Each structure stands twice: as structure tokens, then as C-alpha cells.
Image 1 (cartoon, helix red, strand yellow):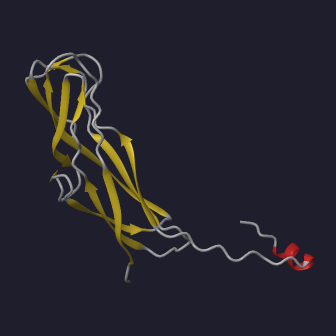
Image 2 (spheres, rainbow, N blue to C red; image 1 turned 120 degrees about the vertical axis):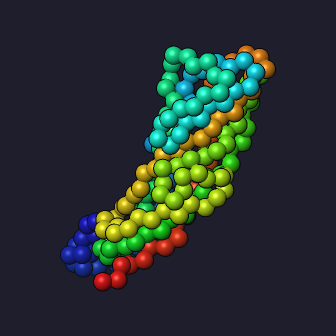
Amino acid sequence: MDIGFGVLALSGIAAAPPVAAKPAEVRISVDRELDFGSFMVFGNARRSVAANGAVTDDSIVALEGTIPAPAQFTVTYDRGNANRHVLDVEVELYISPASAVRIGGVEGRLSSYETDLPGARRVTGGQPIRISIPNCRTRTCSVTFRLGATLDVSRQYGGARLVVPIPVDAVLVSDDRQRR
């Protein structure tokens, strides 16, 4: 940031007040949506996509098209200033229950969330999940995780491309400076 101290002092123009340091923040980004792939059902069916990508079907007729894959999210901590201290960051993550989605005669509902985060393999909607980002030495530090779930589908008539949004929130719990 160039604020031209020499020019300001010579011209007699008052300097702008100092810019306040940007506060620390946590962001979550969707790297990949949870995709249950292409399939056909007659009545009621279920497809599970695990965090590791394994797929389990019940009354599903698999079709060519998109391949099932877990969602992938990145939680990023931004210290917001020039602080160079080594930090241990704790973030609380919340995966909210997803609402049922109905398109025409097809309805889908998510259940049985699963992550690849240590200590949070199986989670329920709204359950807090603690994520640690130890030894944060740069302005931004992040952790990436995958999320799988089960899709329960009922079909009365027709067909649809169901997209079920998964609300995920992250809250900074602590960003403590390491003790040496």
C-alpha cells in the first residue's frame, strides 16, 4: 500500500486515518457438490454415496451419465492481518439437515451424513463438528473434507434431476497463539 508520506508532508495535506486491521474470519467453499449420479427408480429407492466415494444401491437401476461422488468442502481461516505468530485454530462446523426436494412426481430426502474428518465419521444434521488447523503459519490456512450421504427417493410419476442443497456453516472457536 503506497500512501506517499513524502508527498503528503511536503504538500501539507492531512493524511488519512490509519486503516484498521482486517479481523480474522472463517470461510467455507464448495469444491464439489454431492452427486448421486444418474439412475432410475420404480416406486421407492435409496442410494448412498460414502465420503470415500463408495456407492450402495437399494432398488436403483443405474444409468450411464454422471458418476456418483461425495461433496468436497474447504474451510479456510484468514487471520486478516500481518500477524506472523504460529496459531492453533479451532473451527466448529455445522451441517444442517437438508429439506426434502420435490420435482413433479419425484421426491428426494437426504439422511445419514458421513465425513472423512477425524472423529466425525457419522454425523447428524445440526451436530457440531470440531475441526483443528494446527500450526497455522501463513495468512490463510485451510482444511478440506468430503461429505457423503444417503438419498431416499420416491417416484410417483415422471422423472427429474434432483439437486438437494446441503447447508454448511463454519464458526471460528479460537485462534490461539502457540506457546513455545
